[in-house]
Length: 249
Image 1 (cartoon, rainbow, N blue to C red):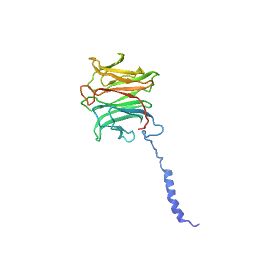
Image 2: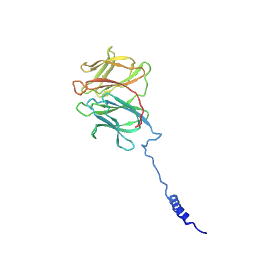
Image 3: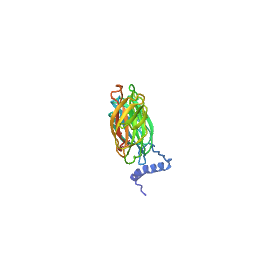
Image 4: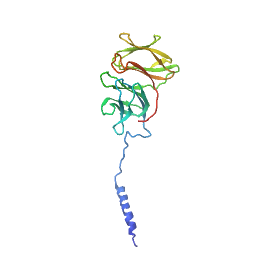
């Protein structure tokens, strides 16, 4: 029988490859734990810029896959909130940098859990120092009709313990220390005229600040800035609605 050597030349290497693969040990593949897939769990996070001493701030987050910092928000403005954004669950790390530099001015790390909401807040830890980052878990509950959930944060520089009352002399908050925050208060939905006083001297710091809290809405109210020109911004009250957008990071 005549052998067609052209055919042998084609199929002989293929036969050898098949024999090699058939005799090789099986290869075990493992999937990176942090790879994004259809089963990835997420939580929500927003950023609030309440650090009145810091203008050019860049907020970065550490990526779970590459373990490198990625830009989250570049050039946020004081007094504004950004988000909510969907972040993958796990131990998440955030850092604030001076714009256009690698100088880290604040850093925080926390466990971000599935189906929870968080606020990441830059604030003036001290008027003479770099800002700090504060992480708070936000409520998922919805207030009843005719009521609002309101949380107060005292992030002002050089200001001691405060108390807050309505113009009708109804006590809203009896005591709030510096760099502290209240629980969510269940307040009747209406327009308040709020007075903020130093608890020690009863000095009015802010007087008749209008605050309208709508039915069924949740709010975060932040005191920041300073008295006696300790920061570039005077003491102020910023009223933020807890609202959501959706972006996976």
